[in-house]
Image (tube, rainbow, N blue to C red; front, side):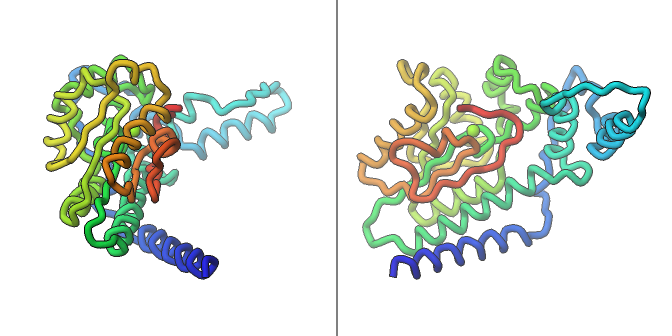
Length: 276
Ligand SMILES: [Mg+2]
């Protein structure tokens, strides 16, 4: 019986993944229009200037085949070439994939999981969904691009305080609205500090999120805690209040692992940075 249920679950998951992968491209799977940057973008990284991955490979292969050239070991990928690939992926240029399409497909898988949880809920059960904020509910793409994809924390933290940082991730707004329409309470848990609460709440509203139940930012000693411990502590409060956390969505493993895990965890893509 258990094996049959597992098989049904796997088949239903494969079907939802296949459905998400066959979706046609839309405005929601393209990069957002970013406000004009007064300083202008560095020319070194514009699509017109940066070489393709194929051109970079060909240059290296040509040099390696030349007996007059002594090549170096170079055991790790060159940061500059990886940044070109990242820029192409984030801006959906070339044939190295499109971050926005992958992001939208993954939020549709989250929607399918939410649909199942809503359909299977027993009457009177309190259901909750947990959402991370950066690269899950709102996108830092415009700032990351402005920083040449460097993820400079000081600049990033200044930017999140501005209204320009209210860049919605449309698939997550859809997910949020679906949850609210079905009476599922939504709790945001972010690694941002409590000093950023007012700007964060304002930007969430500007980005289209209305009617959340909780908004947790790091307060006091939580600023020193690991993300896994801090987020687990906040999720435990939700569970202790009698909710079933049916879905947890985040772009970092540290959003998803630890105490009071979601019954389903959805990992969104984030090629820009890694937060342990
Ligand atoms: Mg995040």
